[in-house]
Image (tube, rainbow, N blue to C red; front, side, top):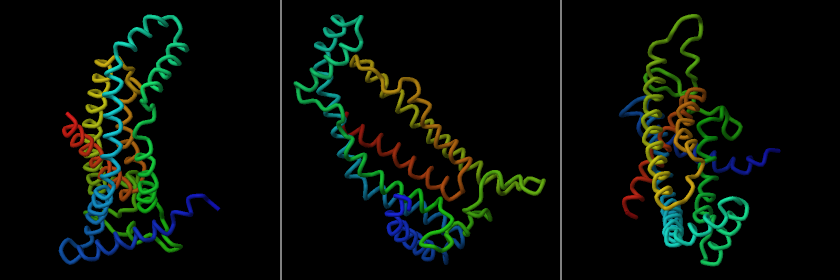
Length: 246
């Protein structure tokens, strides 16, 4: 039995919630209500999780300020152990420990968000929910089923232009969000450099956001729509929290 089966009741509950929203929207927007329901439900869940994101951001910001105050001492350690990176790392961690600065600040709130995000992903990626077909994937947006993939636009030896256009719009949105996220990563790296700290993952952090865009090209339309929506929320949320801490 998969350990993820423990999430099945939550996935089923989320499925009924999204289906209910889609049914309520159907008289106004028709079958497109399912796609809109995915967006609205994702925003609602992320809004409920915002206090965790705020706590995580606050913890990270406090740790950064504390490390900035120790920058002169860290520079001394770097000069002392410039030829011994192992001892430099050990001495730096010991300094942080003595001053009560955690190297894992903000991790717990982030971990608490993971089960919710996993439930959401499974809801929009699974063909079945509660032992029954996932009805959301049978709905469509602009005539394109939410359970279809980008490569389906080229099935049967001819190109489905409408299908291709819907995925093109989704990928364009994902690319714009990835660009925004990459800009945030670059700014964070610059701030770390100004404090004399190593930038996490270096240049790789600036390219990682584009992974969501690539993922959207290979998963069902419903999953891609969810990924674009939740990523957009994450990037906007980081910008909002950063302004509050400036």
